[in-house]
Length: 235
Image (cartoon, rainbow, N blue to C red):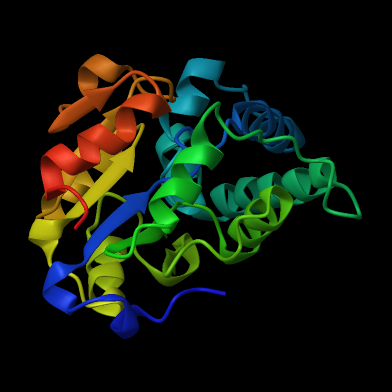
């Protein structure tokens, strides 16, 4: 069960830790590349190389496809989007267990540690659909950790700050006491646009040198000290 937000501590004492998913919490690159390859092949298009495909991870799917093939007619872009969704579902399998997307080493321990802190609330801001996020959380047993879950279905694509602003509103936390954690420039730009501090992770899908976060970490063991440095330690 999620803890009641107002029963934890006064709202001014709360801090909000917001996570991206793909490339930050889970390594989903194999599924993403495979599904995008199938989608382009279905439309008899030249398949982008792996680097280009991974460069759009984090964007909403329609925006990602438009960036990969901007010269295609809108109708054909829409078919690529649908083919990607169909392929991803096929990879997942009828029981929803085929998709791999393993957690990165140390992710579970850090999430559970943060979730146990009275003044720390957790949120997700992801380019995944609601269905996709639900499947990932269920697969890894993380359904009850997040107080706010923001998905592509309900917002403009990153780096628009809508996801973070909604998470702040839902949890009653201040931007000054919030931090966005992600692996792409889209995550960092979204965080800056929302007025929150940013932590970049070096293990994801964008070159760490391009992120320009407030802090860059090399492993999950570095994350809690980085959060404390930017938002203040737990009380």
